[in-house]
Length: 111
Image 1 (cartoon, one colour):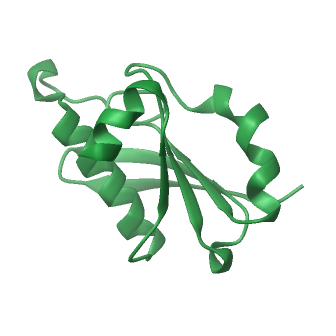
Image 2 (cartoon, helix red, strand yellow):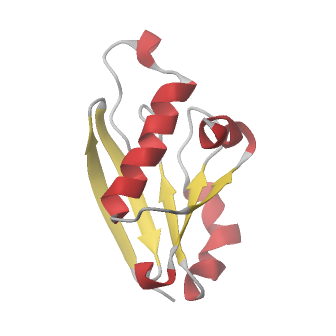
């Protein structure tokens, strides 16, 4: 089983919770979760097994799971969630990631 690394990533809209399994030297697969409104934990049974091949990175969008809530609910948008994806990529120190958009996560992934 691979080591799990957790972080709270600073963004202009508060801190976003990020969890990584596996070695970043092999690249990173970032999961843009479905939802919105839920965390990422339920994806572990399907994706943790890939951590032997590549880093698998989970995160919770702003206002979801273990990420900070925004003071004004009208600030939530697909663009904000897309910014969360880019903040995660930047935190990882990578120019490029493999991005999987799951259900609703496809919208910020395309954005």
